[in-house]
Amino acid sequence: MNDKLITFANVSRFYGEVLGVNKVNLSVPPGITSLVGPNGSGKTTLMNLMCGLIRPTQGELSVLGTSPDHPEQLCRILGYCAQFDAFPKGLTGFQFVYSFLRLYGYSHAECEALTTTALQRVNMFGAANRPVASYSKGMRQRVKLAQAIAHDPQVLVLDEPLNGLDPMARAETIALFQEWGGKGRHVIVSSHILHEVDRISDQVILLSHGYVVAEGEIQGVRSEVKEQPMQIEVRCDRPHELASRLFQQDHVVEAKVSRDGRGLLLRTTDADNFYLLLNRVILDAGFEVESVAPADDDVNSVYQYLIGSEGATV
Amino acid sequence: MAVYKKTYRPYEGRLTPGWRRLLVLPRYSFEDLHRSRFLTIFFIASFLYPLVCALLIYLQHNASALRVFNAQAAQQLISINVTFFLNMLGWQSMLALFMAAFVGPGLISPDLANNALSLYLARPFSRVEYVFGKMSVLAILLSLMTWVPGLLLFLLQGYLEGWTWVSANSRLASGIFIASWVWIVVLALLALALSAWVKWKPAAGALMFGVFFVAAAFGATIDAVQRTKWGHLLEISDLVGQVWVYLFEGSNATTNGAVFFRVTQGEELPLWCCWGALLVLCGVCLYMLRRKIRGAEVVR
Image 1 (cartoon, rainbow over the protein chains, first blue to last red):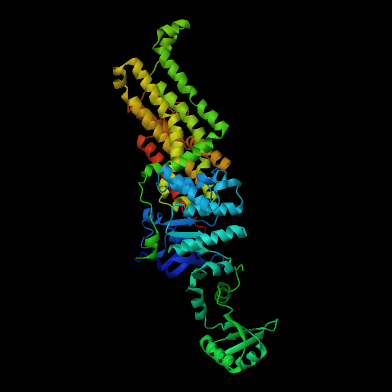
Image 2: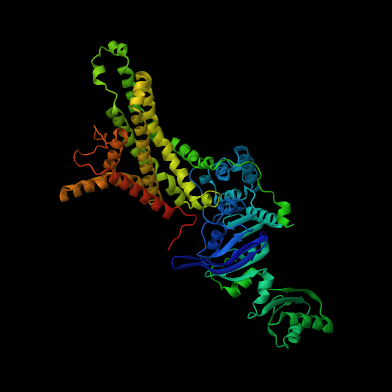
């Protein structure tokens, strides 16, 4: 077992006759990993499996070398933030974080110090002594995040943590994930907000109907989707002329000039040859090129290609 | 060396023992109960009967006090014996049933309704510990209402009567303690199981009474129609009553239980049947809890 990876080896989980996830083989490295997929695709099941909340029907998994069969060790290295508003009745924000820390067996003083630190990190210390019931949706999300990070875990599993956060809180939360991931820890995030997933993720896992459709860095995943021509946007001084020259090649299947007359969107089935050709054409004809950039190697495009439009929020 | 090993410093301080972690659950439950004025008053009022009992024990040993009230004859009427302690425990246990019906339904159902179980179980805290933690709320409350005052009264009587009385009646002390725990375990498991399955608190509370009273009526109907005594298997109070009589007096019973737990003369079931029925009831409750207390509820 690898003590740096979260590994799933042929893991399946069925709920009676209903499929949760099927034959999942994954090795999740440190950094921010996003789970992306429509509702019911198996994201929460995968997270629950990681946290030991449910056991696989078949297959094996380990979190940094620790099996869910050893919950005492597993839960100490793992912080979990549930998708739902999961708050025992009547607690204040401080009591909420503090009481769950006590379950780890830390002393009173240690728990108080860790609670204070965690609430300060999510910018909730000012409202710590108010009942959770009086919090707004965004505050609840942040206090949930505080209880997940309070014991300083190596692996942070967050089920839709950005839901309900205002732009400021969202930016702060993303910065926290990036800091956490930058330290070489695992941050596993599920989200429907694809442009944010795109911005924060080191790697993505795309799920559909309980199966892992793709995994890895998004550019790598995109390049593997051969059946969808790659979109490349070129901004230059004479896009019409460039389009006519490039369109002579078989692998360029579509060329579209943008409304401002400065951009050209091209679709090609052979990106490597396209770039070689583009270099040659630009040098031969003396185009003034502002930029050349892939237009569809983001999570949203990959999602559309591999899964379709169901469930996506862009 | 891996990056995370350079940056990650796990907690290396001392950990509290496992049983102390359980106390996180009752701590906030008691705070919650304390906010209810009705429950606070009810809990305090439940000590009136033991206080009256303590007064009776005192008066029985204090002739001068009785003389003040001109009631010397009362000394002969007060007898501190097995019936005295059984009645005290019977009355207190009936109040304990009410307390369990008020408090029990609110223990697990809010966690299930709020999907909070995953919060507990994603920590080094097992399902068994969760159930024990929730059970401890009722166990502490009901202990304070049953065997704690019972044993205090026994000690008071022993103190006033002398060591000979204590050694001669030691079975009373063990009876009070074990009989109370039989009742506490049955009540707590039943309350938790109903709380886990019935999310609406008033309905769960009503069902708690239903299990005792409706099942008892059903059992009595079976007895009457079938001319049998086996319908008593459905009467939890009857089963507990028979177990209590044995725990207090052994095989040579002189009483037939206490208030609410009285056994119908001549219709006693074999003792092993009573124990067996109570064990089955506890087993059913544990099974119900096992089905519901899960980190992620499985919806088929």
